[in-house]
Length: 84
Image (cartoon, rainbow, N blue to C red; front, side, top):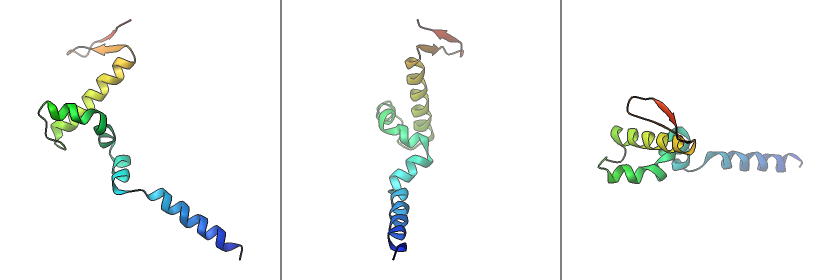
């Protein structure tokens, strides 16, 4: 009789850990997780969603945004500058 609540708890925890296919894909691919924020601007610039060029655009845009939050930027020669 005491095992029944524990079994039900284990089943509930197992089901909660699964998630939908979209959630599992977001965990497996970080570019898909960034695509909600950085995907539409890349699509507007002419990249087809899901292509390698689109993925590169998403990663590059995310990297620029992260550097801007840190008050850093780099030029085309990959030289780092402080903007403060």
